[in-house]
Amino acid sequence: MTEIKAIGVVGGGQMGSGIAQLAATHGHEVWLIDSDPAALAKASDSISSSIQRLISKNLLSREVGVNALQRLKFSTDLKELHSADVIIEAIVELEDVKRKLFLELDKIAKRSSILASNTSSIPITRLASATTRPEQVIGMHFMNPPPIMKLVEIIRGADTSDETFDAIKILAERLGKTVICSQDYSGFIVNRILMPMINEAFFTLYTGVATKEDIDKGMKLGTNYPMGPLELADFIGLDVCLSIMKVLHCGLGDNKYAPCPLLVQYVDAGRLGRKRGIGVYDYRKLPQSQKSKSRL
Image (cartoon, rainbow, N blue to C red):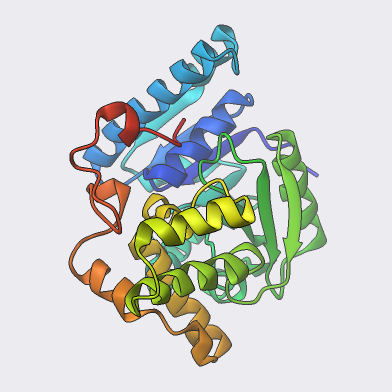
């Protein structure tokens, strides 16, 4: 098995930048790619700030942080990934968009490169079918935020080889993660359980059972969750929650996964959560310290 040294990450959002930061702090050369220069600039600032916070909290040495920033490169050109050993896709949770990207990556990446997806719900087999190397396509689902959360969910497609699985499992463990393995069904493990709970919290609000504050308070104090489901939905992004519910509903064919109309309405209105300043809750008047809560 070839040692994984160079890693490419596609997608400069919260997940992609977090994965890039994680890989760089563990000694890998990393290219972070996004078609939007503004997204790359924001990702660069976010990674630098995150590393500084980790250093200030003694969670990362200054030497490791400085070296990580030197190993991290940014570009809008996918061709920079031609020599990457592993390419991790972390773009929008839409199957057609991901398949198009995998088609492009298959043409650019060297023949030995593994193509991994950070999808949280879309079957890997369908993404792999867009390539000529389905045996080297795998799901590598990080939790948010990737530098902090300890879990990685690995999903084998129908044709994923043992060699690919072993290489990605070893990589995840070297990044300090605990690995769980899922069969290739919509939603996998974590979101198959989590998203219907969040959707049910929206139904509880939609039908007037309780206020948003009491729904979240009930789950935090009654079940020991660190965040209530509606607060968590805002943190994840309501658009992401809706996309995953649609994948579950379509992929599993059960109406119990139908998205709550209130969730659909909020997304239609642009109320996407913390990243937009408003979702279930309104964050626009919060002090900056509280807006940054739960992020590193």
